[in-house]
Every structure is written in C-alpha cells, then in structure tokens.
Image (cartoon, rainbow, N blue to C red; front, side, top):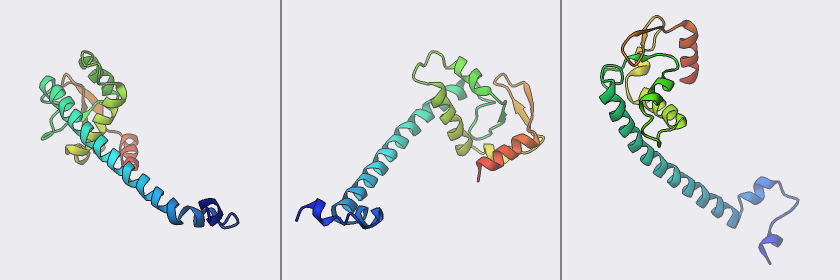
Length: 141
C-alpha cells in the first residue's frame, strides 16, 4: 500500500494531516521554524545592543536603558538622520529596535497621561495624551 492509498480521502483533512508521515513532517517543520526564529532573535538582539550603544553615546540623557525618558512621537525619523552613516539600519530595523528598547528599559512604567515627552536634543516635545495612553494600553494586551 502506498502513502496515497493509506490516506482516507473522505476523512476530514485534520485526520490526514495528523497521521503518520504527515505528523512527523509537520513536527519537524515546527522544530525547524522555532530554531530559525531563535537564531534570528539572537542575531538581532546583538544588533539591537549595537544600535543602543550608538544612540546612547549620542544622546545619553534621552536614550538611557537605566533611566529612560518618554520619546517624542515620530522620533524615529530623527534617529534615522543620526544613523544615516550606518546603511544596515533601515527604518524597519529601527522600528523594531524602538519596540525592543521600550520592552528592555523601564519605558512602559513611565508612560502615563500627562508625562513629558522629549526630542533627541532634550527639549520638551509635549505630553502623553489620553489617546496615546489608550493606544499603548491596547498594544500591551
């Protein structure tokens, strides 16, 4: 009997996909995917550390893992200007880095309505609004 013959074509797809060779294949694909993601995360974690060091060196009072301040809305464009010599740091990578920075620092704990936001030069960039807070709360769910 061949593999094709052993598959009950009238059975629900779930029954066939979880049978024998199909299940083994699916399990191996999942394991491989998890391994690739872990390696990708590890590589980018290192890249994120390098981006942090670069930005912290330029803006130690604004980009500071130990004592973060709230950043101006849209600050990514300003950061990109300061990273223009590093062609490996794209808008997408910087966007992911900002999310990483927010998770790694105490950023979210200070994000409250009325808290001051800052530009890279340290000037006031406004405050956190109720709308900002609602958006952040939704992202945290």
